[in-house]
Length: 97
Image (cartoon, rainbow, N blue to C red; front, side, top):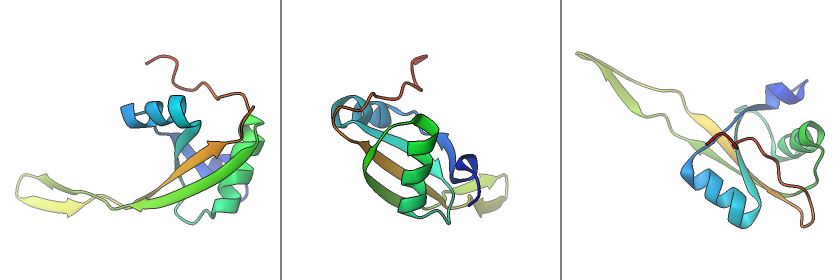
């Protein structure tokens, strides 16, 4: 992983993600499949200039999708929950919701 943007693909802005952000100081990102927790932590700290307390990751299995008589699966992807330390300023990426 060379750049911050190759580790973090996009923020996941869902109702659950925004609730975690408000109540537990936790951010949710889609990350690269091969990224480790340490790489995710460094990328978030560098990109948003905050200190990270904890990183939790999970691999989300792809769903089955159909197009007429043809069916297939979407790709699996990796999700990261990043908890910020106490006293850190919360990142505002979902203000337009």
